Amino acid sequence: KKDKKKDSKKGGKDDPPEKKPKKEVKVEQVYEWWKEEAPLEDGKKWRFLEHNGVIFPPKYEPHGVKLNYEGHGPVDLNPEQEAVATMFAAMSKTDYASKPIFVKNFWTEFKRLLGKGSPITDLKKCDFEPIVEYLEAEKEKKKNLTKEEKLKIKEEREKMEAPYGTVILDSHTEKNGNYRVEPAGLFRGRGEHPKMGQVKGVIAPEDITMNCAVDACPPRCPLPGHAWKSVVHKDDATWLAFYKDTINGEFKYIFLSAGSSLKGQSDREKFEKARELKKHVGGIRKKITQGLKDHDAVVRQQNTALWLIDNLAIRAGNEKDTAEEADTVGCCSMRVEHITIASDEDGPTIFFNFLGKDSIEYKNLLKIRPDDEDRAAAGEADPCISFVRDGEQSNFNQVHKNMGQMCSDKKKKTTDDVFDKIDTSSLNKYLKDLMPGLTAKVFRTYNASYTLDQELHKIGDHPLKKEFLKTETTQLKFYNDANYQVAILCNHSRAVSKSFDAQMEKMDEKKVEIEAEIKSLSKEKKKKEGAAKD
Figure 1 (cartoon, helix red, strand yellow):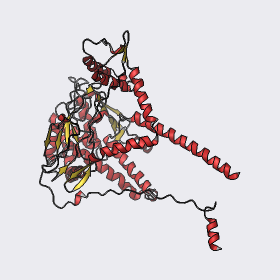
Figure 2 (cartoon, one colour; figure 1 turned 90 degrees about the horizontal axis):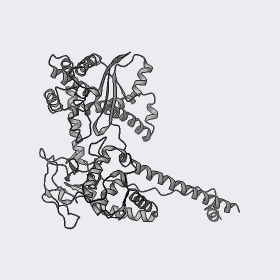
Figure 3 (cartoon, helix red, strand yellow; figure 1 turned 90 degrees about the vertical axis):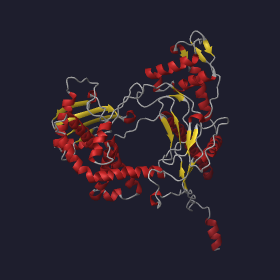
Figure 4 (spheres, rainbow, N blue to C red; figure 1 turned 135 degrees about the vertical axis):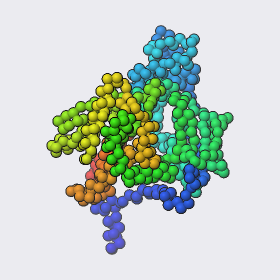
């Protein structure tokens, strides 16, 4: 009877729902490189390196869609012309298509490909809409694939890419970084790059140099009839391969992933150098204070620049050819137009406004901390306001005076450099005299690390300490808030990525799919509930 009662209860309404089996969590083995007992010889990065090379983008397949030209109608294009026209059509709905530099550079390239005999002589009369419609139709086809079809494509891609994802380094495997060769396309660049719109050429195996161990199996070229430019065995280098960019002539390197042992060792060296600076920073800051008032203009400029780098974590900056690169600057390359010397009710102020690395805007008002706590709290919450560090008010007054003199020089125009007597090289040479191996970058690393340390230390007597330590989520939130202060110091704001629109579109599509699935499940649930009542 008891057994019958037990059986009758099975599947009853009061039974708790069966727990779903937990998903198996894959635990990846981590190579603890910091425990390596046998260090490498000086300058050597590895003993053995073997990898499978790189993945090339698919070869362009002509679609045959014609370009319409005003007064002529459809125009036949050869595969090379069609490929470039398709690149422009793909970007015709983006902000780039309205940028004069982008359009001008594209037309110069496209006109050259069309040749003298082409009926196309004016870009404004070109109608790319047929190609745009073709691209949108192809995108729609991909959207309308079933889940099974999408999964199959994904699995095939992962199977094809799998051999390239890992590298044998010494006695263990490591994750590869970006092992895909950049496809041909229209160059965008960062910020208002003067070369945006130019055509990035196809990279062939003959353009690529591979690096592996002498006794390793060299990477096989995946394209029939082609061969690598060369295969070298440089055990003092951390790159796996490199090729030259067709736009700027810069080298593009293939490295291991950001979590690799080689990157870890490089980071450790960087932070150890910053740790070394901690021993010397007191004496260096005293020399900066003395140098700010030096009679020699070069020494004054060196120490004024160094004071800014130390207090604001501004990059040193290098001279750039603005015809070849975007107009980005750092401390030594700031121009008079980038700085406003003034004062407010709390004292002297310096306002910085320029494009820094990767064309990220740097706007910062440096000033004395107000006595009024409400105004001080509002300033601390504003990422575009920096208060002078305690004990540095006197130095700031001198920096304000020095920069005022440098910017108000009657001979200087707004486009002239503020620091006209020094450059990054001379500043770093001066730094090496203060401490062996010291550079402006080390100062930046030191101050970023110090800021994070100070922010994390606040948890010790924080009134919400128990709340912060309650769960891993709250601990992570506290850490991220601390790290945010470092991001403000270093101006680590992110520009909108090139793939942002595509990512948002995918998320919108996913949202629609999920909403439709919820709606369908809700209807099914109501039907079942109705059937159960009947």
